[in-house]
Image (tube, rainbow, N blue to C red):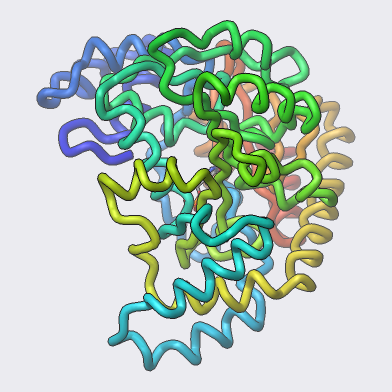
Length: 393
Ligand SMILES: Cc1ncc(COP(=O)(O)O)c(C=O)c1O
């Protein structure tokens, strides 16, 4: 989320400041009309603090980019071809192509096209959902730690956040989330599998939860990483939308399709929910014609999805074995990244890893430091484990 007066980066920086007790707080606050007190409360409220490490978001080519959960195996050959073939059509709006993509998505999800809204990445749709549901305030219920994009946008519309700690096994505390709902709850956000933990909440339990609570409050289920599961569709909540439940499912082409830089995502929701969004902001726009044609090629490329899944699982297994050898207790992952604890101050860790050519992320969760590493190419993973051994020695 980028706010004109107080960016997410500033928010994270103030979180870090609070976590570390460092003396830089005044630099991060007092930056205009965004309530400083509120930001301090948010930072203090969360179990999760990201360590803002002041390294480039776009590291140079020689650095292994294992910090943003990008898929290193693509885009697929068919996708690249579609991009090249579309270059000459850059003078045209993508209305017709977008309609084709929407139809393919609807077929895949088992719903009709009026249940689909697309946008430039799922971030766009997380934000649009937050804007339209929280323009008049209210509260949002989500797990903590969770992926914060939708929650942060909701907060910037003065919504309050009811954060329910993940359970000891890192799954959602669904009973706790249900009891957190009150008359002012406008949306529940569930990220499954979850980022930054990589953990999963069992589909059966989540399905009963959604069936029950969606009669009171809409449930937003962010399935960005779901397609890394072998039985993704069986674990998806999309069938509930098809059954008329007030559930919104978000998916992205950024992960299994390896199109993060091309920006295509979508939500599956009841036509009445999409109308609510469409009444305020325009849906199905914002994607460029090359990306739409790339997504049309990619969604039909089952072989690439299977390879992406297989290669990611192999990379995860390699990391598991290496971490085990180092005596590190990682969080079992259902995604393209792994979270594990480190016995070192996070900022210094990030700097040292970066100095040896590897970009990763670090978080404080309940005051304990963790590293999050994305699955990369074999050479990158080898460099990562070698660097980790050196840095932790
Ligand atoms: C859980 C989750 N949801 C949504 C997104 C946003 O992805 P995009 O905007 O690229 O679709 C991400 C990105 O990493 C994510 O981790």
